[in-house]
Length: 186
Length: 257
Image 1 (cartoon, each protein chain N blue to C red):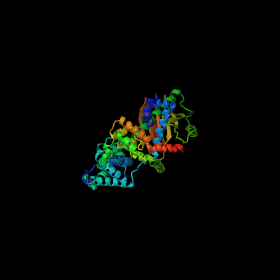
Image 2 (image 1 turned 90 degrees about the horizontal axis):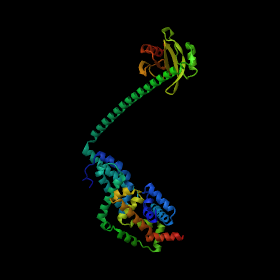
Image 3 (image 1 turned 45 degrees about the horizontal axis):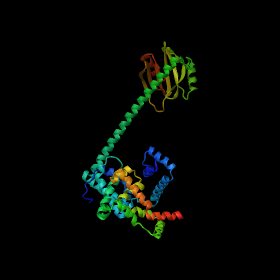
Image 4 (image 1 turned 30 degrees about the horizontal axis):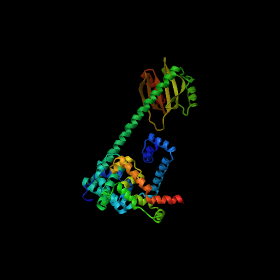
């Protein structure tokens, strides 16, 4: 794939180094949360960088992070489409409810997960793709609604409603409720 | 604002996405409403827990290496496609040379303009000193035609000793001395008389290594100003006398004869 690529201009190369390299952490974090796998995330970011090299000449100012994360997200969705196509279809409000139901631990399991600090992590990882990405961009990347809307290509109102539902789900996730009750007793 | 409205705005409120006005209204409601502030706290707790427990995955070193390799490959392809490396160096050095030439020229131009402006400012200030002294009738602080009186009077009040000469034999008697200020510095003023005209000559020391220069004439508000450097001093003669009286006077002072 690399050799088929047309050689970028020196100006494009230096813009790429300037705009994209500082965003590698954000890119990898998003790719990692969307693919849920370290080496797949690296492949996705590599793919995104090659695309960015090609398109960087067309980037005329604005928020470089939002611009590059849009490309990363597209690369990640292409990867999910090739490897887990079911996740792309299974992305509605029902999916959200079902995601909540699948995490139904026994009190012992809840205690174990709390001890290892993985309860919330698992709950987020179990969120449908469309909710997970909005939550990660907001809570871990601390991006504004406007930039999230640009990256995910949805209206700001949809950003707000997806965030609200994702948070509500996490708050009443049986796993977390079980933990909250336990820590309340203690 | 009621609870229904406040609850709807709470997520935007805790994400700092409300404008100042709305934000203030939500805050006001929260002060008096336990259920709404409990929900606010719940959102804050969730946020803290996400940041604590959901890892932020930084790009590993292997990824940095891969991307660097991608850039290196791309720049090799670019170099081969665009220009041979040696040719690129030639253009680069030509560009650097042209750049330095432009910088040096700009520096010359800039310092020339700066010198001209400073000189212009000093002429204006010298003319103003002369006008002020003439109008206030405070022509001299020390009245004496004896340069052996004027010189010590000035040097005891300054950190330098200006050369003082009398040209009474040529119809230009020294009438006294005065202290003025020029460019924020206290300087000596020598006062000469030519018929009914008063001539002020402002004197300040030259920096070490400064070259002497013959008098040049400018005009400010009807006064002639002759400026010269010499005898370790910088001289400004200001008067309403004609240039053919003023220029030779300043030239003789700067010559130090």
